[in-house]
Image (cartoon, rainbow, N blue to C red; front, side):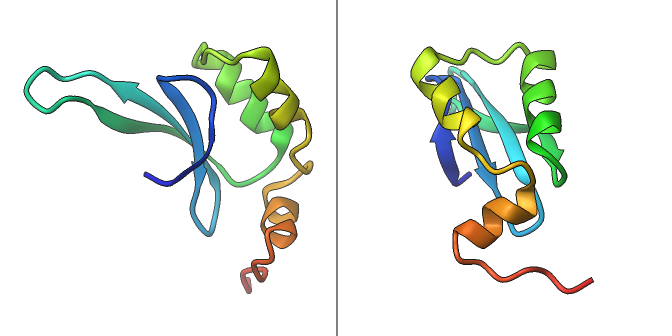
Length: 88
């Protein structure tokens, strides 16, 4: 898991080349815990925010500000990070 935004101790957003990924940390006594990917969003920030609400992710006010500054689409986010667009 490679998060770019930690929402809280148990919630994070990561990404691969095709989408944002919502992660939740699950505690396991034997393994010490593990991050579980819950949703994959390759479209818009609105869908990302809806999925966070549906999963009841814990998000503090400072993190909400960071979410608000995300571009409107995943592709715009990738381009702002200097990554090339994926050929269709």
